[in-house]
Length: 176
Image (cartoon, rainbow, N blue to C red; front, top):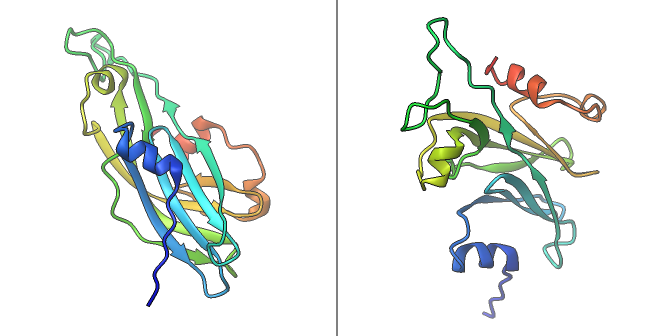
């Protein structure tokens, strides 16, 4: 038996140069579609092939959302830095959410998988803190033609063509 394999140079660079932890899964359809889907850093990404993995197309989408740090009535902040100053929170794909299964759905035109968003702060990320403050399990929907990602919502292709603002996404994800 003769085995062959394929690597993705960007994922190799992330791994071997210790740039970022890549969270990923593979989905394979019965008609020759193959996708390596996941996220690294602040971006969702997919390597997609419709010809039995002979060649892949890479697509990514920046997926970081700055969150307002709410001030309580007594003047204290919801999130603070170690020095007591107001923190700068944001939501992005969590580096600690890598256990999920991706599957092709709807005549192999979409991929669905569970994923995770992490709420963290600029200071904690700069200090190398690994875990987010809060961990939000969500599902990811990848629509293949054209490629775009949606998080935590289930809508039709026609509805998805409408630009979705980060505020609208936060409302749908229960953050506001």
